[in-house]
Image (cartoon, rainbow over all chains, first blue to last red; front, side, top):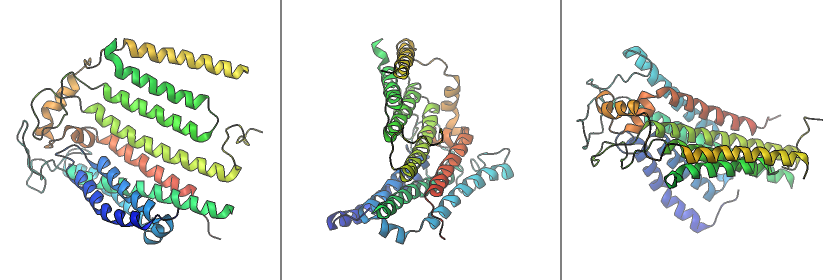
Length: 159
Length: 114
Length: 90
């Protein structure tokens, strides 16, 4: 698809960092406020799709090759399974939460009942949120990019 | 009987999706019908876990009271992501069929049968 | 009106009757039947997992296997889309 006018390109380059920061905030605070890995990943992927629509598909696929995005997505999937297997090595069973109540990084238990809490609570949940968020951002952006680039070549072949 | 309006909305969504899937001949309209059926099933999962006068199941600075069930909300999250994955694969197959046959009418793309 | 269209209309009407009958006579909105599992989860989330969000604790800790299956489905869908639009360079 072709690119859009100069006003749209300027406003997109101002709005894109704000939308990415909002998506990463929803991913990082998944264990305190509503949100988590899947919801924040969908917000950040739609910010990346906005850049694809405004700048055209030829420019975007020259800057970002799809092989690097596939490597990012595989990295997210492997770290999710590695965190689950570490529960088998250090704890009792598969998917065990072995960081709650211990003295390592995420081990504080909050007070029972409603109230504010720290950010270093909740065991392996923030690490799993980051792994799943990276996987969802890379996966959804690759789907939109491959479909947009394939239909551009289809139109040029038929003419 | 007037208090079951969410369940009647679920039935209306599923029936509209089945109508678009059975009686239409364009492939894109069939894909839209499948998406409507998935939306109806997600709404049904959420309305099964509500208690009258309850708040969201989150403890950070919450006003007191009974809480709704968190398990149907978790199952609905999984269902939405699976719906997105199936929709992406269906649309890729429709683009591939158009490039091969030249039309997307369901009565003309049946070369496997003869 | 061929025979196939009449058969499709009759089957659609029977299925519509089933759905509307179920929607009118199900238990009223807001009074679920069994509450034992969710009462246990609401009471013991902050001690066992240490999270302040009930939905995230259920998705990643109490029901982690479903999230593993969903990550596999997402990975398979992305691999299938890339495979369909690949051009072999000769």
